[in-house]
Image (cartoon, rainbow, N blue to C red; front, side, top):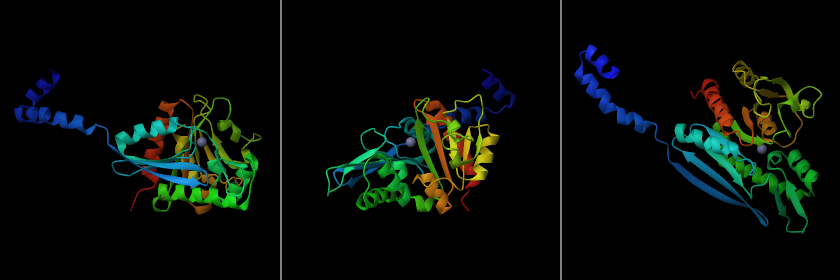
Length: 274
Ligand SMILES: [Zn+2]
C-alpha cells in the first residue's frame, strides 16, 4: 500500500510499472550459482587421494581444505560461493585427518598429516612423527603437496585462504598465548572474550592482523620465526604469499560463514587487482 502511495506522490505511473516489472529480475539475481566440479585421482602407491575442485561462477575468491575430516568449513564455503562465486579445492581420502599409504618397497604403513607436506623439512617431520620415514616417502608426499597447490592455482593467485575445523577442548587460539604449546608460532594474538576461543583467523601479514583486530575477530599473526612444520602457512610465508586460515570449531557453520564474509571483504580491500 505504502509503495503505491509513494508512487502516486511522484505522480509517475510509469515508475510504478517499471518497479513492478523489475521485481522478478531482482529475485532472479539472488538465485544460487551453479557449480562445476572437477576431480583428479592422485596415487600415493596403493592409496588414492582425490583432489576435488568446485567452481561457482566467476572464480573470484579461492578456498582450500586439506583435512578430509573437517567438513564445516567446506559447507560454509559452498554456501558462500553459491551467492558470491569462487572456487574450493578439497582433498578426499576417507574422512580422516591423516593420510596412510604403503611404499612399494615395504608393507609398513606411512602416515602423515597433509598440512605438513608443503616443505621438505615438514614432510620428513610429519612422516617421522606418525610412523616411518624414508626419502622415497618424503618425495611422494611432497609431490602430492605440489599437485594440490597446482590445482588450487597457487602461483596465479597472490594469496591463500585455507579452511580448517577443530574439536572443542583440543585446540584453540589460546594455544598461541605466551607460555602455551604453540607460542613460538605466533607474534601477536587478539582475543575477543565474547567469542568462542575455537573460532579464529590465523594470518601471516600484519595488515591482515590489524584489519581483523579492528573487526574484533579472534586473530593470530604468525611469527616470522614459526617452526618449519611443513604447513601451508609456513610455506606461504617463505614464498612471501599472504596467507589466511579460517579456523572454526566443528559444527559452527554459521560462525565459519561469518568469518568467510569478513575475510572476503578484507581480500577486496587489500588485494585489488590493477
Ligand atoms: Zn585442519
